[in-house]
Length: 118
Image 1 (cartoon, rainbow, N blue to C red):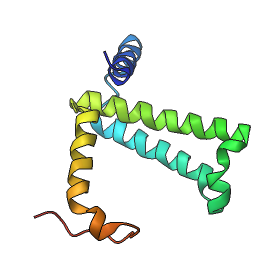
Image 2: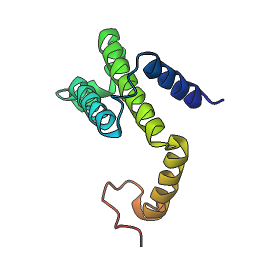
Image 3: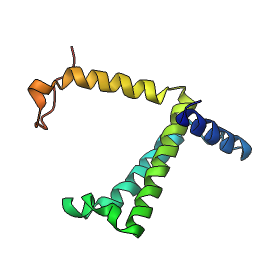
Image 4: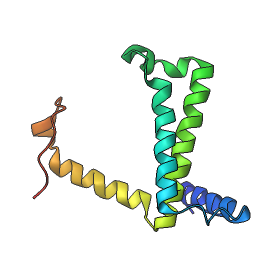
């Protein structure tokens, strides 16, 4: 069992033990995920690029950031489980697609948007 599978199983058992599956609908989990991403953004919102790059050097800020990242991971993992999505497989597929859209030759050092794949 991979670490992601073990985490997914732990989260599923956590929700089942509390009878929370009734609340863990795709809509509710997606909304909770969006809220947690907002909290993650709030930790970085007013920092300069340099301050953001160095945030892990501040123990209190690092703890807050890790906690928000964990919340995002938990809700994303739970949402994928409820929907039956293999997150690792989906991420690999997306990375392969991005590799075709954003070739090294055409996009190295560029932030421009690629046209849609045909």
